[in-house]
Image 1 (cartoon, helix red, strand yellow):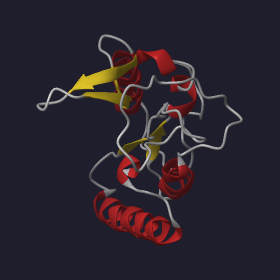
Image 2: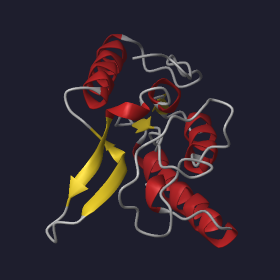
Image 3: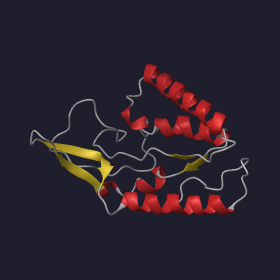
Length: 160
């Protein structure tokens, strides 16, 4: 959800409203269904926060981002606390994926044959496979655990 928002203040408010609408749906169904919210993964564009720039990017490379760099993951900062407070389990992926900046598709050839930098999507096998294993383990744990909603058994920033 979050990577398609340009986070000026109006869009931040719209995103928070979108998350709250999603939570209304979750709360309605929470007694009968298990929900897992997956954090937004990091992007690694050559911008101050790594986010997709407003202009089209061609011919550049994906770049590393440190853990102390202000992040484009405003989406996670808004959504994760709300989801956890609502009793939704959160699959944390941002911190573990910050260091694998070189695992992006990077060059995406479009129909018009132009070379466009892609620092959002990931090569496979690789990062998405680690997330699949993490999700599978969460599902196994949830299947065998009592339906307790007071604490999230999946701590933030676990490596994959």
